[in-house]
Length: 77
Image (cartoon, rainbow, N blue to C red; front, side, top):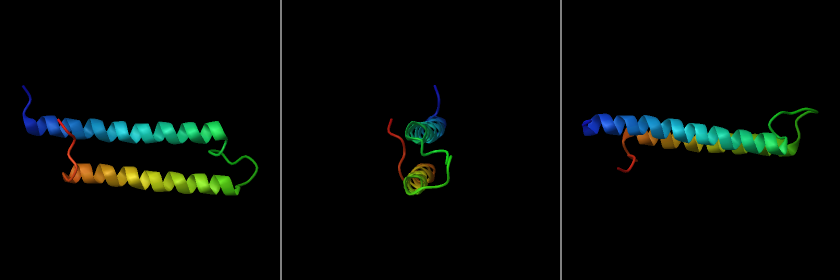
């Protein structure tokens, strides 16, 4: 059996990858579906709001992963 330290380390890796890929999938899906991801005829207000939304949610994801690796929010067994 795996030791608890190794198991916790692998869980953090899996959770980090899953959270990052989930954020990426949702952000790209919303951006492509609404047409806000690629500015075709200049940058407009809805695109700026979308990019701000992306920056804020990315900061939240990065902070969550940072806290997970610092040990403040360990994944549940």
